[in-house]
Length: 209
Image (tube, rainbow, N blue to C red; front, side, top):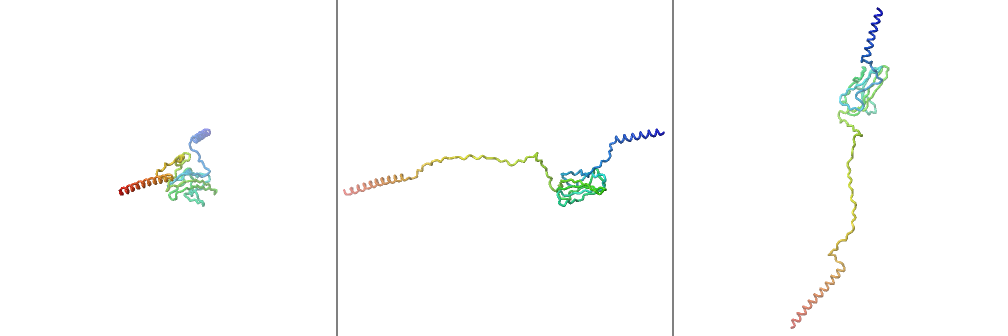
């Protein structure tokens, strides 16, 4: 009887071990630090977004979710949500980005432990763009910006002109020509006087007759 019960126990144990070996179930994996899975750093966010991640850390007590400006000298954080329920790859909270101005922000997930310690993870470079256009990133390696085309106009070589003699002006009177003209005028005047004097003498002789 004892041998029969022992055999049944061994069969049950073998069946249980075989079931566990073939079963897809695996023990829960614990993480060392809180995780924000979404949104990721550098993403553009609009409207009401869902923040997902994990807080399944040994010794977990509670968590809080905050947001802050990307650049803030006071390092002020604003509370979004808090919970005492551990999250494993699930929803941590929601963020209504329509209630804030467009700009760059940060998200922080802070986990509190039962030994009064805390651990944090921060996502940076979140771009809230509800009221402004979304920037288009241009890769400098794939884009070539050409400047204005410059057309060079060759300047003609200077033309050397040799001085040319101007044609003589026929109306130009030189001193030699002036003397020549005066001499001719005197000769013509003398001839005219000689002719006139001859005519006067001829008339005078004719009247005496």
